[in-house]
Image (cartoon, rainbow, N blue to C red; front, side, top):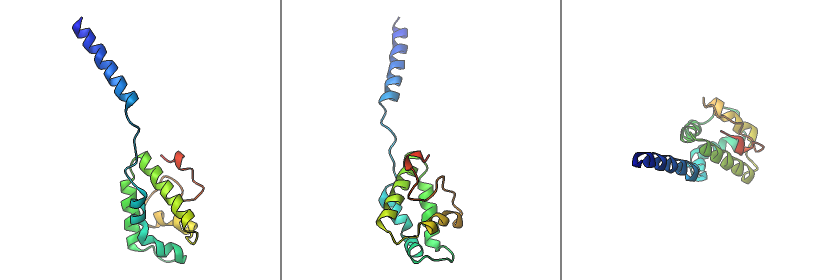
Length: 120
């Protein structure tokens, strides 16, 4: 009987852990996004048509590597949208062309109209 009670206790304990577990939170912050993408700013503001600066590609690759979870990718998306609103002189079309030019596949479109809650 004691063994049976221990099994029930374990099952209830694990169910409680799953139900009461905190939701996953992003570890990437807007500060991380800003730091990673600072080398891209001149390129985006000047409307450059040449090659993407090496530091910009490094930042994109670093940020993409850091944003491996859904909460992190959603946070990056939100930060990018906020930055785009705060800097109206940034060429958004040019911004969306940077990841492919740097050899990075981002699972969503870099655009102010992107619904970040749908990013996985």
